[in-house]
Image (cartoon, rainbow, N blue to C red; front, top):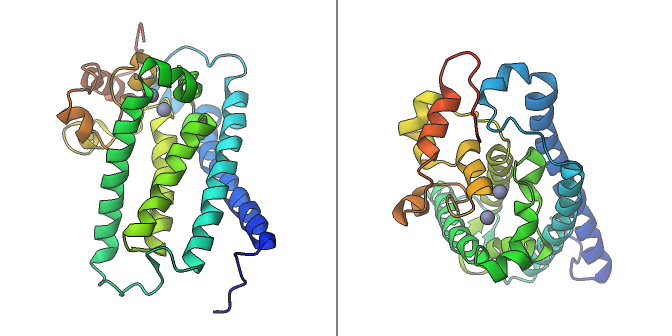
Length: 267
Ligand SMILES: [Zn+2]
Ligand SMILES: [Zn+2]
């Protein structure tokens, strides 16, 4: 395949524009779809699984979209730079799926998710140190009640901390580009599900899937209580470090009970 020289200034700008269109398209498509399904088209169906009965703050969604657009610019810059680094041969991104064996495709996905989880959990705890919080993380927490649009609503410094980690790993760990695409899709859905404000996982999953994979109830408690539930995809670092909210299991149970008219009072 004959690719253009991405290292030229023209292609740097073009790549940034292409990434920006794809990233914002992905944001509006996924966050928008969840918002319409759960809040506009079928709100009645999900009423008893809605975590907070309070309304969003005035202008919240607009602000979240504004911050998310700034995050998208930062993600586009790191995306474009990653492509250039790849073309210059500085990354371990590979094209032939069997280059490291087929087994390595799922294995590398798990490794990347584990490393990303570990990185995020610890920088997230660091971002909750009061002086750091004010500077870097407050923007995300301005959404006391999260919405699907909170998913990428970060201060530019936080967006940068998030954006640089995977490209940095691509410099040292072999990764097929399919795995990168799958990882980005998982990231997008997980972030929107975690900020949905409605618990979508079934009650049956409380002792298995929902115990280990973060969902809306888990992450909503982080936005409300601040000192618990720092994880990104998984709960294990919170469980190991005893930072999982004691309110999580009761809340999950209450939201997923098969009873009519359940409201979560005092939330
Ligand atoms: Zn936080
Ligand atoms: Zn959040």
